[in-house]
Structure formats: structure tokens, C-alpha cells
Amino acid sequence: MALWKSVGNGTLEGISRVADLDAAKLTITLSKTLKPIPPRHTWTFGTIMTDHMVIAEFDPEIGWSSPEIKPRDSLKIDPASSCIQYGTTVFEGMKAYIDPNGKPRLFRPDMNMARFARSAERMALPPFNTDQVLALIKQLIIVDHRWIPQFTDYSLYIRPTLMGTRLGLGVAASDHATLCIFLSPTGPYFPSDESSKVKAKPISVLAESNVVRAWPGGTGGHKVALNYSAGFLPLRTAQKEGYEQILWLLGEERRVTEAGAMNVFVVVGRDDEGVDLFTPPLDGTILPGVTRDSVLDLAHAYMAGETSLPGTLPLIHARERIFTVADLQRWSAEGKLLEAFGAGTAVIIASIGKIGFHDQGELKNIVLPAHENGIGPIADAFRTRILDIQEGKEEWKIWSVPVFEA
Ligand SMILES: *Cc1c(COP(=O)(O)O)cnc(C)c1O
Image: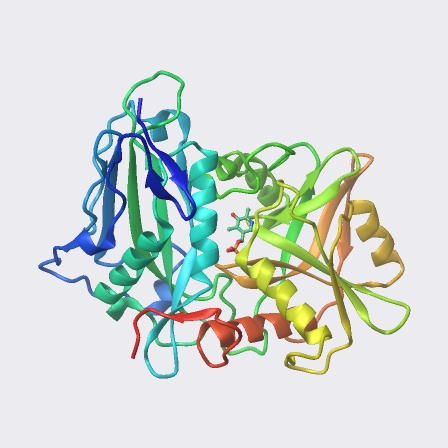
């Protein structure tokens, strides 16, 4: 058995010390031929890959191998590997943006790295130094920088992935692992008609009462591959009924948890002319999204008078709070349900226009107020503000991080 354990940021410390992940040992082998970059209207999310990838392997006797950047290629994985048999795969989703000076930037990568380490730990995968993973991501972006789109709302999606590669069918943690990082250029997640005023078509969601995405004590608070596959069948059913995503619920009381693979927010009118902005609390069933945290942080800063938000907005009282389908029905009936939206790296903010739910066997809909440009003023304000910070057009705290200095 391996004699290692993780400390702090994932640095390895053990009785017999094994090698830590070390970006200084990186070797780079460039591809002899570079792919042509396809026209951006063909960039369906996550379908086009860049030229190179990062690979590093963990062996319990040796530790982390010297990381490599090499031409992107398929992996050779034994069918008895842990990730194939038991789903020991965890991942991250983040993006690189080009700032007005043409320099690549990342958005709050420290949050992604901390979450990546937590996900790996939850799957009992070997630890790694998160600072070194971030250094490798930056190197890969530099190598493949010609793929970072120069247009607003386009970016380079980054998918760090850690797979358990222990060979054997024994039901046990994987003490071997492969780290793979690859990149995919991406445009608006829900593309809209460029000729119209509509910025983004609102999505419809179907509240799912029979299948749960996450439960107390489960893995819902981690980005682990097996959280997603279990949602594909109900998603297919929802799509047959004409909805684009699932609104995930929890428990008899039908608590709202997430929308598809996004965190969910609702805007509810108050008696004092302000609005409440609610999102469910992080109780282990909710994925701690970077976008979710950014919306909450900006909302609190706005209320404290520390920052402004685009547009003319009411006072926004943001709070983490449990709410149910019955709450949505009641707020809607009272005319107080003003906006609903999903939040995540891929979309930033996706406006929700319709919420289907089953009521004693009958399918009913909560229809949200329509907006001329397809998105409500509050959702739009956060979307615009976050995108401006991501693209380095506006500075806020140290959220936007240059990939290299000067
Ligand atoms: C990744 C993800 C989110 C959004 O997280 P971000 O860090 O904002 O991208 C929300 N819900 C689920 C289930 C996710 O996997």
C-alpha cells in the first residue's frame, strides 16, 4: 500500500516520500502539424480540441511523473482500470479569456484548483499540488494560445481531468492516476440569432421529482464524473416533453437544488420595492460554483455600495436560502417571481423562462415574465459584469489572473 498522504494544498508528505507533481520538470513536445482553426460558428460546446495536452501519471511507489505537454492524442487505458470500472474520474471546468491588450487571463483559478483537489480527495484519488496543476494549465495555454478566441463571449474552455488508473477489479480506491489537461475553444453556450436583439433565448426546465441528482452525504458537492451520467436518462425524458434542462429537486418537500449542471438563482419581489435574490445553501448537495460565488459576492458588494452594476436596478438582498417548488408556485401566483437563472462557467448566466412541474399527475408550468432581450435586468447585470471582469475590461479584487506577467 502507498505511504503517502496529502497536506495543505495537496503537497505530498509520507513515510516514504514520493515525488510531488512538479511543473519545473515539464517537457514539451510540439506537434509537427497544427490543425486549422475551424470557423467559430461550428464551435458547438466541447467538440473542437486544440493541438496539445498535458499528461502526468501517479504511481504509488514513485509518485508523480515528470509532466509532459505533447500533441493531443487518445489515451491507452486498460479495460480493468478503476476509472472505467468504478467511475473514479473527477474534473474541472474553467476558461481562458483574452484581455483588451491581447493577453490571456484566467478567472478565479484558485477556486477551481481547490475544488479539483477536494473532488480528487472525495474519490480517494492520489493528491497533487494544486499550484503545480495551475502552472501546467498556464503552460498549456501559452503553447496553444493561438486557439484563444479574440471575440467577446468566446473563450478557451479548460478541462483538467484526473482518472483512477489502478488495474484490477477489486473494489478499492485507485492508488494510480493519470492527470490530463486539454483545451477546447468555445462560443456562447446557448447561441442566439446575431441579427436579433435577443441576447440569449431563455431556457425551459422541468422539475424532476422521481430522480435525484445529489443527496445528503453523497457526492453532489464535488465535480465527479458519476454525478452527470445518472442524469442523462431523466434529461432525455424531459427533452421529449419539450424542456431543455432538468430542475433538480430534493426530498418530499421538493427543495430546488440545481438547474441542469448549473447553480440556480431566483429573483423575488419584496414589499419594500427591493428584490430578494435566493440560491440554495451549500449543504453538500449543491456544487459550489465559482459563478455562483461571484454572483453572491457582487450582489453583496453592490448592496454595500462598494461596486455598481450595469443598468438601473433595485436594491438586491442576496441570501442563501432553501426554497421549494411550492414557494415558486406561490411567488409566481403573487406576481413576485421576477427572474430565474442558472449560473455556471460554460454559460455564465442562463435565463430560465419556464419551469414545468408535476402536480397530482398533471404537468403544469410556471411562466416567468418575458424580457425584450431574452434576459431579465438582474440576470443581465451579473452576466455583463462577470464577463467584463473575465475579459479583463474591468478589474475586481484579484479575480482575473494573467496567464503570464508583462
Ligand atoms: C460545474 C457545475 C456548476 C457550476 O460551477 P462553476 O464553477 O460556476 O462552473 C454548477 N453545478 C454543477 C452540477 C456543476 O457541475
